[in-house]
Image (tube, rainbow, N blue to C red; front, side):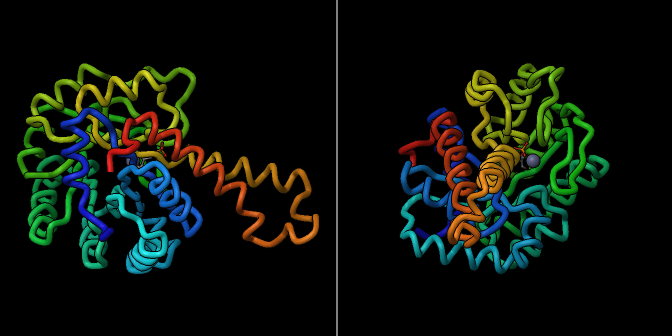
Length: 288
Ligand code: G3H
Ligand code: ZN
């Protein structure tokens, strides 16, 4: 299936009360792992690409080339969006030019008026070619690929104004954090989430920092209007753990165990298990 904008898959998820996973990709193994599970579980998915990950993979055009060719190789029939994650203003236009089908412009670190003005420009440009847009107000705590946030809770009035720009999905800081959650984490602020959904006129909401959020909170967030949940750290941890185990058990020293296709295989299986678990928890299995 041709790669698509995230708009329709999120509107469907929002209407039917489930979440679509944004799984961040880091290399060839990650893309293969996600596409294999999507095919197996007949689920839509959003492939998240941070600017750092795009650079690592040889640039936006190479990311698109890899995803497009693997999509054809696996004969994927499910909707797949390729989404710039926490994009800068400049990065948004570069990724658009390279053929990304969905763009997050993260202007949350700008003074609000500037975030609003820049989001409007990105929306106009992306919508003119059928590409979906995500904006952010407030911030996600912690750090992801160089994007650092203090975790400010979103201001509902600012959310309303950004939603009016016509963005297709909206990320609000509601106490969520990138990376591992600390033991004393207070949890998601559901009152703010409900208010954000009310003032944004029911547009699909995005939950960043999806790794490590307890299942009951994920389900409640979906019931309050979250339709896209971003997961990165959990796949990275699972990959690292499985790879470490392989090496600690000395398997790379046995026979041809050093062959990268063998050495990376347990890590790929571990990513696939996380993706299976998330698609099932979010409720998107058989929703393609
Ligand atoms: O934008 C991507 C995410 O918000 C992923 O967060 O690494 O905590 O799962 P995570
Ligand atoms: Zn994020």
